[in-house]
Length: 99
Image 1 (cartoon, rainbow, N blue to C red):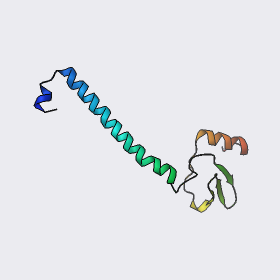
Image 2 (cartoon, rainbow, N blue to C red):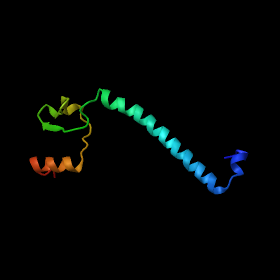
Image 3 (tube, rainbow, N blue to C red):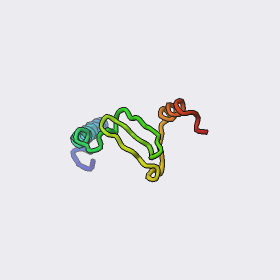
Image 4 (cartoon, rainbow, N blue to C red):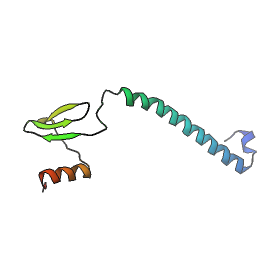
């Protein structure tokens, strides 16, 4: 805002000018994100991340079944299990308490 023409304008105009510039920048960044994310969503090699997952606990490891994938995660390769409360409560109801 060091442009002499802009600094001679009233403060209300300068504030409105900055708000409009901010909205334009936000719009350009949003369109850029959409242009990058939409192709990744449709052509991603990691399909099966979103959607219904079924987990089976087996002797060999943890079996994960989705509409696009059926994989077995061996116990030796698992370092950490992450859960959500919904998933934890469902598993706890089916196999009993973990404590």
